[in-house]
Length: 430
Image (tube, rainbow, N blue to C red; front, side, top):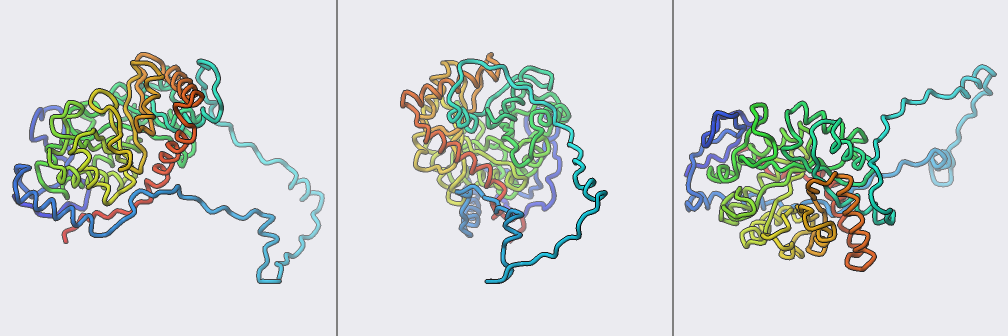
């Protein structure tokens, strides 16, 4: 196998899809001088091992363990009373007395800024719950929703809940996306507040035919993880995933559920980097580092397989606070395998088919954040049912409020530290 070790410093160019249906759209990938090779090839494994060693060379703390704080600016009164030197107070010359005209000008009220558009609050559904529990619910809940236009019922309800703090994020799927312009307009409608307090806009886009972005000509298509791994070139993978992340950030997303750390052909998700834990760990790093460059959070999706656990351990060497996600169902009964391994928030994909109480029981299975599909129920009704079930669980002792608040803090830490990680992956030859 040929491995150049060099990646293009500019954005990855467009290439025609080399496998599958190449009549639909273009594929945005990276320049690569190497040829495709068998994953089990000894030389390819040696190169992957060298790349892993290089990534480990400079120890890093990974995701920050505390939320960054902004120093408080001293008040005006404190500034006036602060001494210049020890034992010496700062003196300020007195202003001359104002004339009547000046006094009137000072007393004239300033023009009031136009008020923002009113938030359309969802209709109250279900009984009221304890405000402290309700606030905690709003920090650990992502919802899927129907609709593509601001005038649709789903986006209206989501906007109200996002801006009032009733949910922490919105999970997008193909049913929310018709075109790039429509998608950007929808994201702008959902959040019109402070950029620093922007909620999570999440998607599942890892490459391949099962991604959330529709298979339309105006949307870029990306190589599947198996095709990326088949090249055996981490630099190529990094450049490709950086381009993918740049595209997602331009559309308005700040969180991407990927890559997949599971055996190839697994029922839960067939898109993976192969059956080798070392290879999966290395290419997962390229996915995460490429996303970090555009401040998009990558959340690896795991199951309970040995490959998933070993690949994640390799990944956590450099980034111990990396979050994870899993589908809680037949394939993954719980996240117990990651209880002591993962320090970042643990996301769980759930469909509320068995009722709100069964969905809420996922907190006891190791989940920190619930990403819920309410089915035919409206987003407001889904949220109200989950909040009521969580309140019941806290009252009957099956869920501790302190644990719920700790989960919320882990998600808050992830948000605050995402842009603070230094990039340790170099894209130049060494």
